[in-house]
Length: 285
Image 1 (cartoon, rainbow, N blue to C red):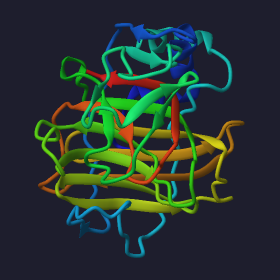
Image 2 (tube, one colour):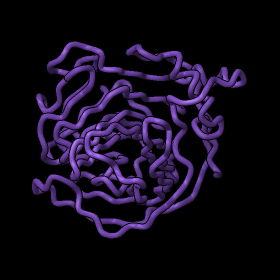
Image 3 (cartoon, rainbow, N blue to C red):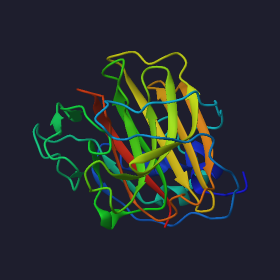
């Protein structure tokens, strides 16, 4: 990889220190930035969605792009040589608050009342268009280079749990969304995508093997770094750390999103799906 960034260069142990230090607590910590240089690439497939109310995105056949998954923030030990990584700015929300709405702790719901705290996790209460059904962090926390991870419970065979990064202004408008995402499209396919208002472009896909099981929980990850091109790494793993699918892709198009943005999660069709232990690690300012 031409681009050097702390999330990959120091591997899993470099980020474990930051997350383990915040284990079991909600909040923000501040530390040093990562390193930045260029990498070249282009997206693979493109298609649009008219946002007419279909419960999920429609896909053509896409190519599999296997690569290294983002480092697992929850497994392994702490490398004593990774003290610098322990100071990476990290946000953690375990959602260990009283049941009900709103979610609290600064989360912004695009469509209020569609998500609720239930038994220590965020549960989705309605299906519709994913561009309207997500929660995000407030704009003053916007980041550019970031690693996200959350535990998702796969709630239905049609579920499409998503993680979002670099969410841009304008995404508060109904049926409109600008940002990058990783999501499971049903039990067998993982995608990384870019949304441009009312259209989306798939950067790549990978087969999930073995497929996801309804009612089970998995760890979903998204890493977004760089500006020209934007480098994307998406992954989904079992809770024991077994990686089920991973994608690496580069967005070098003129529609790439190079500006800092918000992060969040949501879906079109993951009714009663659950999100827990949301982590955001800022890899560079």
